[in-house]
Length: 146
Image (cartoon, rainbow, N blue to C red; front, side, top):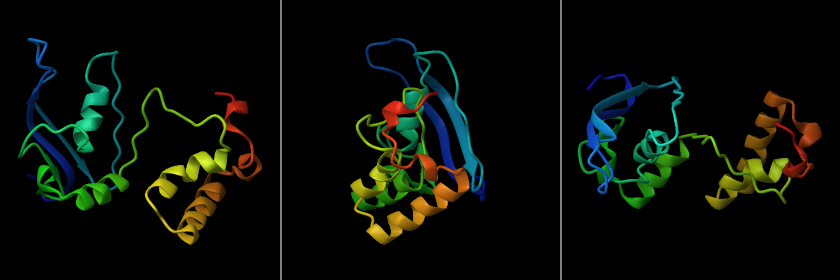
């Protein structure tokens, strides 16, 4: 295990029970603080499964996925929530709530996690300035184009 790794997956060997083919065969992965990763591939090759394993949504057993050198399978529910809050995953079939505005869609995960209103406002203001989206904030997302 490298000391700089923020997230590390070691020797993951896993496949769907109904399939004789392993989706991951002694797969290793690491990510250092400040890095980001893009996972691309054909449908059915394990991209979403890998994301669910990395976030702890799909359990694969002990000593497979580590965050800051700690086995995430040992995390309490509260520790797992904290860990997941620090990740950002965008799936190819991302889901926006069409009847909500741009701003409401952006802040929705924070509302679900019970983050305070002042913190939500501060985070939104930073994003709004960084991406210059103030003119879009009240627009329902169903009117956005790709």
